[in-house]
Amino acid sequence: MTVFFGVIAAAILLWFGLKWFAVTPTTKLLTQGPGMMAMAAGAIALLLAMTGRIGLAVPAAVLAAYLWGRRPARKAPQLSADNRRDPYRSMVRSAAFEMIIDQQTGAISGRILAGTFEGRDLDSLNPASLRHLYLEIQSDSESVALFEAYLDRRLAGWRKDFDFDESARKSGTARAGALSEEEAYQILGLANGAGEAEIRAAHRRLMKRVHPDQGGSTFLAARINQAKDRLLSKHR
Image (tube, rainbow, N blue to C red; front, side):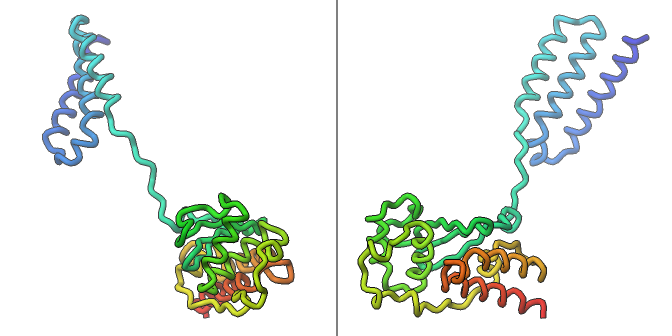
């Protein structure tokens, strides 16, 4: 009796499998076909085994295992840039740099977007290369201000070591340009659509780390304030 019901079950499974193949679109067959074929081959193997045809059941079972292993791997869900954004990492850009600020520690890292060292991480440059880069970007006051904020964190006494004329530095007069909404979210490390409470909390975290009174950068503080104002204007 057990053999009888086993044969019936295998036959039903095989029938449904064949019916699925008959009505399924080709595009779906390409992705789900191997798995369904494996189950069909498994049903045939079971049917043959139940009827005593072990010599035929074994190859069918091997085929089922092979087809099962050929199934396309499932792709991990693709996260949008907003979903991937770290709420404790802020991004500030200029023409020459893309800087990342850790809101918890105040650490600054960056990537060079233009010039001799384009594509390099700032942390990979030695002091001599940093000095060369500093001289190279002097015509861009925003990049100078951003770079100085990085240097203040990395190299104590760099202003003296670089031996530049203090009056020639332009960071003191650097003015932050207009921000897009997306840039404002990046600066505060927030996902698009963040609420007012999240905006204010991110602003507070950042200002504790980069405010000039805490040894931070006037330019960065201004940029962070600008990002907060840009986003809060949506909630008024």
